[in-house]
Length: 487
Image (cartoon, rainbow, N blue to C red; front, side, top):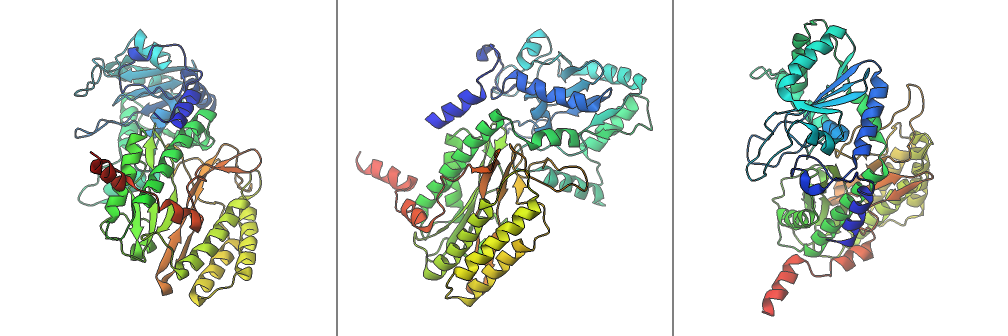
């Protein structure tokens, strides 16, 4: 196991309660955070709901022999990895009760699962762990009190996606005249009304409360995401070493996936965006079937799902290991503007003001650049002006339990949007020069600190000389071939 991985895990587990790991059924409860961290999160939710009751469903098992992954909101509050679990948080008693199948949920070759009882309470740190069959009786009793009921309205995010995509699919399904199914969350709210004998119950959305907590990461979350980013960068650099004309996009993807899995990832954070040549103009191109040609640029955007947390990093490199003169010109001015954007990042300042500051720096960079290509110059001017006059309140997207993570920590209406220490996000502006067949986009994982930011992916090369140097190093295929030749 790499030293950096050991360090991250030690940090993340430094205050775990003394409880022998061997007694925790495999795949039923995370070992990445201590019980106190989950308890503190639940306490904050309970503070927010007052006298109300929050009820959450966990994810269901896969309809095939595929690994189970808990939904993001449920994992964030419990760490429990049992399918079809239900959590009830009572604001009045400040107790959190978990309901799981009474016989445990057994998955072939996994072994025994978490079962209701005192041992499950010890493992999870929850107030009680009861048979799922008792949930109906509990819901009926809650309904008699006529208290406020909270439950998430957003769909389950179970890896490889974000809530926006999940909700979009649910809406498309509901509006499909040949389908029309309501979402799992809508069905659950209807079941609660029926079980509580409360037809006009307005179920309140719990998501905003949890999302605000998820916006700022704890030190242990940051440690896990730092390791996720290290694995991401290692995979991208291995793809750089492997790249050469004649390979297919999917072969570069395979190299990164090997690194991700060897580093302990449980799957991809999102589908591999490996685009070469003309495919680079499509921001989310993911077919991966084109053959690399000499003179192509490769845009490589891929990251793993590691301990439920993700990163998101993109790099651009030449398929043959050497940038052409026009590629060098466009990439250099783009990189300097990209770095200017990063240079203004700091907390507690309106984001729009920071974007305008970056735009002015970009305009100065463009003015000082001697261009040989008029289309590259025009694209760079437009790029800089876009930031100098931006009306956006965002640098990019948050990252965390989802690749497009929730909870930007937005202030009250009418208050300028600022960055908060502990937030993690990416920037990924694209420069398109269609007249010369060029398009490029970089992306880094950034942590907001008390004074500015830390680039977690800074070790992945972006300068032309550094990229070309990495690409001279032997890749996995060459190393395997050399080992075979000496046998």
